[in-house]
Length: 62
Image 1 (cartoon, one colour):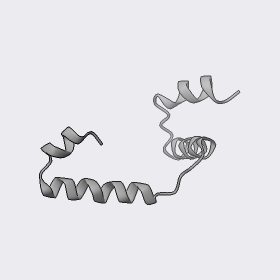
Image 2: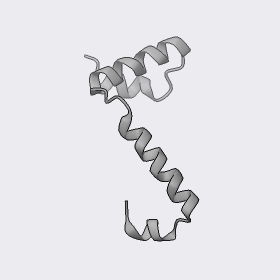
Image 3: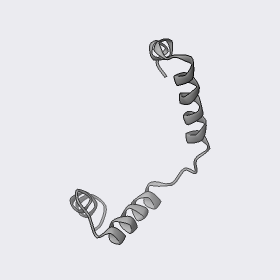
Image 4: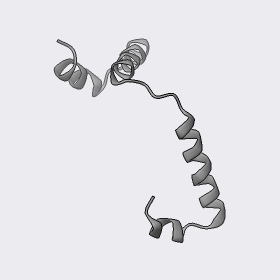
């Protein structure tokens, strides 16, 4: 994080930022293929492809 941003944050905001960063660091990392599969699954459940239809079909699915 940029030191100038840290200098401008108050103590509570800085604490919250550190908590969020710790949480994110502890999250499970997924390979891209698993992320794409999850996106496909969710969009199939909802039936709402929106911008995913063009992106997924043109770039990832052959």
